[in-house]
Image 1: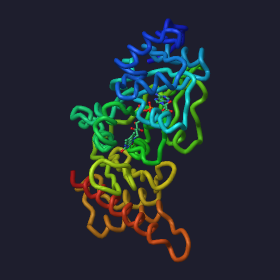
Image 2: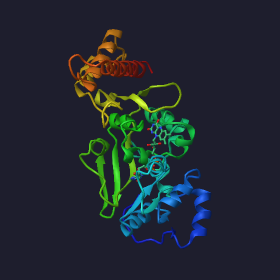
Image 3: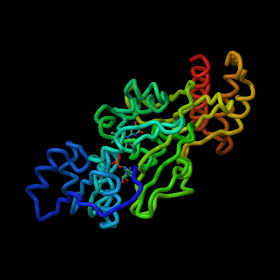
Image 4: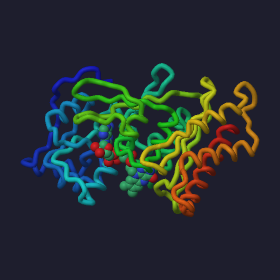
Amino acid sequence: MCQSCHVPAVSTYRTADRRQRRDRGHREGAAGLTTNAPHAAQAAQSVTLPASLDEAVAALAAMPAAVPVAGGTDLMAAVNAGLLRPAALVGLGRINEIRGWQYQDGHALLGAGLTHARMGRPDFAALIPALAAAARAAGPPQIRNAGTLGGNIASAAPTGDALPVLAALEAELIIVGPGGQREIPVSHLLAGREMLSPGELIGFVRVPLLHAPQVFLKATGRTGPGRAVASVGLVLDPARRGVRIAVGAVAPMPLRPLEAEQWVASLIDWDGERMLAPEALEAFGEYVGAACVPDQGDPVPAGVLHLRRTVAVLARRALGRALTS
Ligand SMILES: Cc1cc2nc3c(=O)[nH]c(=O)nc-3n(C[C@H](O)[C@H](O)[C@H](O)COP(=O)(O)OP(=O)(O)OC[C@H]3O[C@@H](n4cnc5c(N)ncnc54)[C@H](O)[C@@H]3O)c2cc1C
């Protein structure tokens, strides 16, 4: 992990070296992408490919106008749509230290560069099942192959599939920047209570290993891969005798219905069979739906009622599956 920052020798492509940039851009792209590489080259005056977090932080400090890019799936969509024209790019795709994970004091320390495809594999699913399920649901295969955990968090789109899971897990972000390293709850970033300062990067995500069932469910407006209309991440935390659920896509950030969590946790026999009657599961779903999709207008529009019902069904199913796993 980055403990100190030094000014590194980074590999930088300048516009003057057009042939080298074109060749390397076509081969691997600014962020390890092949499909978007020509757009990346057009979009930025320079593309820097640091090999470590320290180097990336130094590159961003040296070029304040530069924008970090990981898989490029969100960033290049914005470039292609004409919404963004970065003066320079700092590609994170070569930083090996953030492409895997390690164990740390009952937690998993996940590199921000983990792709959805990697998180969807069985070994990761054995570690953090709900995050693996969210990763498997995050768009079509080409997006999952390139898109990263850090990009999902930094983009903070309401439909980001990893986000309700990270909120339910109460994950923490390890941010690296010119001032060193700091840690913040993921919910603070998603709620805008704390922001990334210029030159800062998400380096790692610390997730508690709960060794208990956890579930991610997502409703889309169509069959096949699609953005969430509503999603839920639900985890059981037997050590704290807690149920935590976060609802995604229905608000700008994942919502935690804390009263519903506490109510249902009080019904569960944590030392015995963790079973609940169907009526209790139904009531939990309704509680979560009403908390996360409140009344808007009188009469309440049909779309709001439908979304509330969707959330209620997802919450009920998620808890039912967790309790029977
Ligand atoms: C067709 C399509 C379908 C999609 N479907 C889904 C879906 O179903 N579910 C879903 O969740 N997402 C979906 N996405 C969105 C996207 O794939 C994810 O948000 C992805 O995880 C973004 O990661 P990235 O590495 O590509 O980010 P990038 O595009 O590289 O970066 C996105 C933003 O994050 C910043 N950034 C990246 N890494 C870091 C870091 N380590 N520290 C600080 N800032 C950083 C960049 O500067 C940029 O502002 C879809 C995208 C597309 C194009």
